Length: 274
Ligand code: GLU
Ligand code: ZN
Image (cartoon, rainbow, N blue to C red; front, side, top):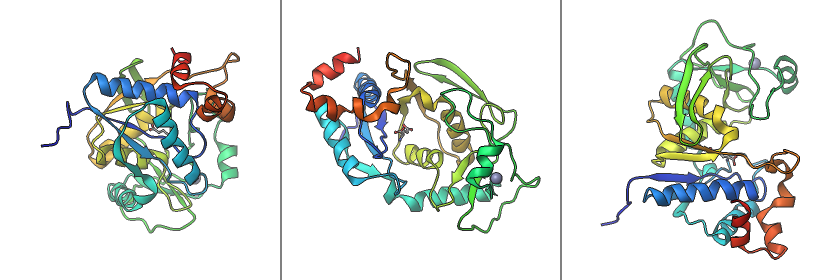
């Protein structure tokens, strides 16, 4: 009989849009520690849903870099680009539940109408509801070239206890607005794909960077709308350089490969994170 241990299932979910850097190493090492401590497993999800930005060479690089770092995951790797039918099904379920409306705003409209994110941690600006109809609809004719948003329950407080940061509270319509679930280019949004996959993969705890705390609130609304189980969350502290700039913004200089090519060992890289 195959044993899955304690039942804890974590995941690593890198996007193959660049090389893994120190910030990833820090988050993934924490994910590994938590899975180990719980006697569980870690799965790998390749978040390659966006064909414009994803590159196969980065998929290969991330698999190699994880192995070099000593981060162990349980195969097979799950690739989002192969799972579009699942996302489409979940999207149809949201439509049937009256959660969704089409947004006709152009990129320029959005830039004009939305207040710019005021904090670094605002991952998606608050949509002002321009295209939100007064009546909900449970039938929509999907049109290519339109994006689709989730109507968030304005004023509802979304609360959860983060394993690292403690109690969190975000208010729908204030801290975040109607967010994208389906994109103009016919692909699911990050929020939708993530929620569908975390449930399908049986994930019990999500370990990821603190830049996604607010996304967790959005994702909890999606879980509820889709009737999916909740998961536990542990958001890691973001790594910043001496100037306070997030490492993610200085990708290549601190890419694990670059450090390796300069002769650093994995142990030395991991020690830098202590
Ligand atoms: N693919 C996302 C990223 O690399 C992470 C998403 C997640 O962990 O939920 O930023
Ligand atoms: Zn709009």
